Image (cartoon, rainbow, N blue to C red):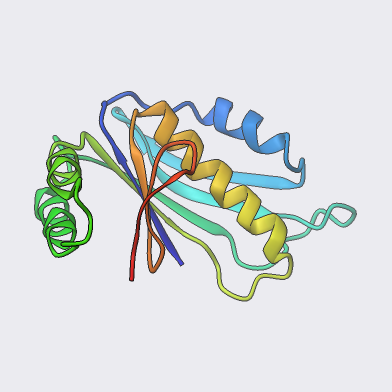
Length: 158
């Protein structure tokens, strides 16, 4: 499943703080991130067997794109166009504008058929909420809709 965070500020979320946040859920995680002079650009978060410390299923894939550096303007416009089709959503024009003005876009791919789906979902939600709070953003989840930074539903996707 795909998750997206539309960040309204350009602040680079701290990977140390993210790791600390996730360690409150489980210490059995392994982080592999890459970056450049503009901060981290993406990586993987691997859940581990708590005893064996070996990988537990496929990793969570996380990417960070900057609107001023990466060519994501067309993507942001496409997402705004998607919102425009939600005629049942009275606040769609405000969120369309927010999407277009996003300073960063995070994409997270959650593995399918994971060995521990409940733990995986807790971790994924913690990641997207952390990113949304850190960047004053909001969350989009495929086939679910838009959510505030604390996980409250803004609009359901039908």
